[in-house]
Amino acid sequence: MKCYYTYIITNRKSGTIYTGMTNDLAVRIYQHKQKLVPGFSKKYNLNKLVWFEEHRTPQDAIDREKQIKGWKRYKKIALIEEMNPQWMDLYKGLF
Picture 1 (cartoon, helix red, strand yellow):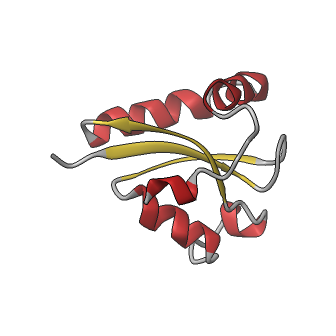
Picture 2 (cartoon, rainbow, N blue to C red):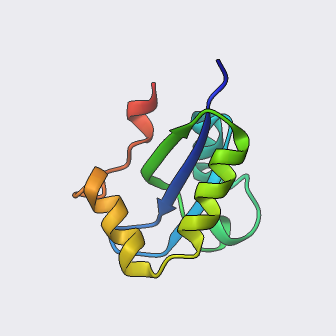
Picture 3 (cartoon, rainbow, N blue to C red):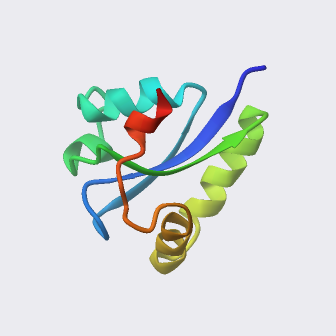
């Protein structure tokens, strides 16, 4: 069964936050790390995966991404810290 993901990346603890969605989390984060994704994440060097969530459908992932993007910063930080209090890079754990 294909999975879809909503994720949050940053450049450092309590740094700039970006929320996105993908159907291949490992590849997408690799793209961010290698600066292959033009735009906001490349400009601010956002390459550290600090939060992600799995979904069954692309629409669920998109809806969650939109929900999180509509939140205030403090709520996004609380979401990250609930899963990852140290803001560790979760990328290596994907393999």
